[in-house]
Image (cartoon, rainbow, N blue to C red):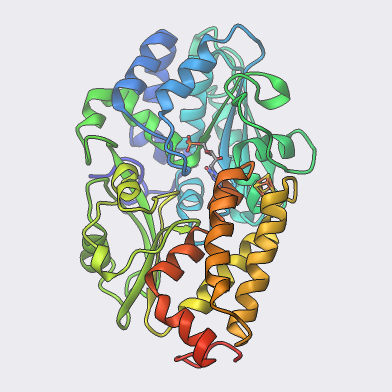
Length: 421
Ligand SMILES: Cc1cc2nc3c(=O)[nH]c(=O)nc-3n(C[C@H](O)[C@H](O)[C@H](O)COP(=O)(O)O)c2cc1C
Ligand code: SF4
């Protein structure tokens, strides 16, 4: 079952306008401009599609609230910042099938009443930028973008904006600040971007993969989509499999797939002996080998005490020291914290300092309680998701591998000889 990678996985598919049209490209836009915005939004709502960028918010509801606003102009933003370590699916879509995103953004623009859209692209995606730029030109030349699209009254243009390499700029409100030319720092929510977004106007902001599902939903119907995968969170998901796995890569599978099946059947099994999995990148809680039957969708992973995030499934074998891994996660969040709110700015720093001292054999058992408390404070009081999730991996590492932490503290010993004790 392929929706997002349907074209990409076809042999000989080039991703230019000609190949896209051959595969039925822009038919969904044609259908959309001859329908009403209410009809399109009702189709998206009945599909039960939720955002694939991490927060899993229902896409139809997001579009509906922007559509209902009487404020103009409105905007469409595609979040292609893709900064979560272990995520590389949006890049694949943008480089191999850019017209899919252009078509989806135009459909969104039509349904909410927007005439302008932006793709906020990760700065390091040099190739993706060139490909997307060319695709936008092609779409303009054939009037899939521009004035009076396909003979209708609808006009829509897309501009590309390149990020400068800050993880927080993937967070939607920090992204909007950056897009407006300011330092990318998260805003207080509410108000949400659908009400007060780009330049304070109603803005629909969706992830690349979320947009990539739209043309198929318009052509085949929301009902069709809602029957795929897990009924509570239907469709397919792009899983980015990396780390100690035999066949790393991007896999599109129905959301009912179990983690164990992804690792064994598609990923070709673990390299070495499995120690843990981060199912949603470094912001998620670790799962151990006893938790592999969990289905890889948003509600199931939440019930299992972790999260799917953007689908970065990182496999960790037993050649890695869990304390070293926790330290590296803490270093990442300390480095990426934008510094706007105190709990995250100071808390990520303290967590890093404590973990560095444990890896040097200078820790105390009370540090473990302190780290757990820090995780709770950051989760409850940080302004945005970066701080809220910053110590998830650290806390779950302490809870699921307490003996390794205790060895570092009490015996001053790293059993793998990785930490500089
Ligand atoms: C620190 C942080 C980084 C994020 N990075 C991304 C990102 O790179 N791409 C993305 O689509 N969403 C990212 N998100 C989620 C966005 O804030 C937002 O929920 C999402 O883009 C909305 O689109 P969706 O509804 O289609 O998922 C990030 C969130 C946080 C807190
Ligand atoms: S939680 Fe962290 S990244 Fe988010 S606003 Fe606060 S300091 Fe910035």
